[in-house]
Length: 172
Ligand code: PRP
Image (cartoon, rainbow, N blue to C red; front, side, top):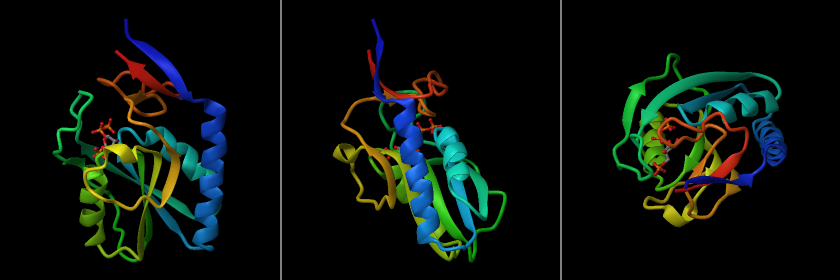
């Protein structure tokens, strides 16, 4: 029987997101910040992080698919929906739910970097460094986690569990 073991409870996520929001604002002065949500997994983190950063914050959405329903990365990054707005001259933070092999964020940082943002940083709720295949810089990490398959707070398994308000380890 599959089971879900709570890993990061709701209150810890909320507290950490508030800290990250304050840190991001402190490091950007009163500049406008453009958060780019990498869909779908980051939608809840984006919603909470945007509200934790005071001042001028804009949001853009980028549709990306790399896992295709399984528990292993296919290694192929596919853009399913591009940004609506321009990011040249903007202070951009790419918002991810998890950095695993690093392939997705490596691809996105290169893709967005050529669009001439004033600065380009990465925020990820979760970081799983033990699985890294490509070295990437994650400027703002919510939680570093062990090599377990996690779901909840945006993360799915076959589209299920994104709505869990906490992060859990999925054990088949
Ligand atoms: C997940 C996650 C990251 C990526 C991380 O996306 O949201 O974008 O995989 O893995 P990597 O570091 O090994 O590239 P997924 O393809 O599962 O899509 P989803 O966000 O729509 O669930």
